[in-house]
Length: 183
Length: 280
Image 1 (cartoon, rainbow over the protein chains, first blue to last red):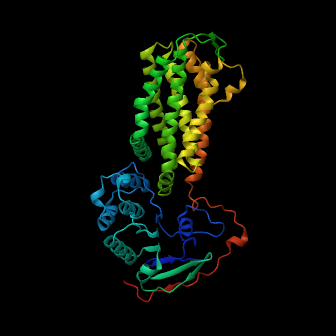
Image 2 (cartoon, each protein chain N blue to C red):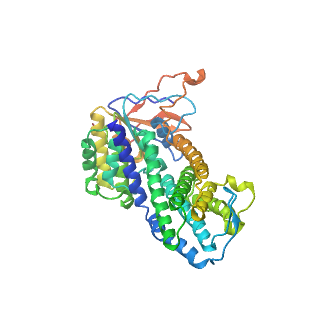
Image 3 (cartoon, each protein chain N blue to C red):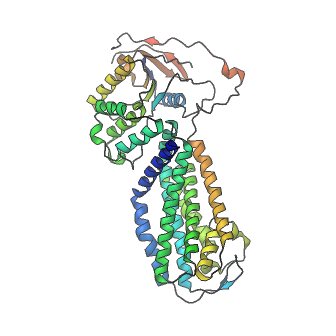
């Protein structure tokens, strides 16, 4: 398969359960090594894994500090903006292990976006979100696309297709161009 | 240099915080160590138990309850640090990888984990020694604490290995408990009378057992046996390091420069379909 993700594009990948969508994103993010082929990134990227990857013993604020140091960021300005959009700021001093599933997912997503990446790889990033947060997530994704970021979302076709610029279907290990279908 | 220090201190701080929030481990430290060591002293008869200390060849005959306290202390400190490190490794494996892939240098993460293990082992070893000293007076309490410390470090490293390789928590718990059962059980002077079998020299806490027993009942410095235990820790830590390295590897950064030609052939990307109703 070939996938060229250009700047300023909000793209989606759909496919049946077990089609390999998450595996593809794990390869694109560097978590897995492909059996063949290569992955090239044009800039810094952020990856939001399908399963929430946080440390239950640390608070939201401690997560941000840990990843701020990891990424060498001077401040948490961008993280703060993402948290405001997702309504996560009020949980800053809560431990991740005590958060609800949706709020943990907000933290999972914030960690992927906090350094303002140029390429975003998001694997069903809205799992557990309530409707308002779900809408705000797509507004945020559109804003990032408009700011020239490349956004790739593994998504459910029925609900999200109309929000995407490009749509791909993963089937039988092959990535096919697919028409976006309004929900 | 300041950045390296900042990376190390940040990781160490959060590692220690994670250990401190492992409430079950904290309860084990606070209650299990004194209860087990005190019960061993109170319940086991004090009649002398004769055995030959392999490290020095000396024939010793300490009180049964005193030697049981020492083997009990080894049992307790090793299982607790093994459990602590297993828990953080098992639960935090994917988080560590996320941190590493976000740019956190793995060497700083490893140094921080080793530091927090050392602090935990030091505290637990000193605590177990202090509890022992309330019942009787070991000849060399510092050597006893040092022996317990390196035993705890070894099992901490084994906890990292088990936490990385095993898929279920219960498997890790069993692996630790069974390792300790065979390890301490075969060496216990109470059970084996200081067995003459050379096989015990290859057990994970052989150095700790020899040095701790000597510290309890002789004035013989057993730095050689402590060195054996440090060797066990180093081996287990290197194994843990290898597994950690594999688990946190970034496939994009470590791609092999040697690729067969049929894999490097590039095709023209297909054009994606554009949505007709893109909300801009």
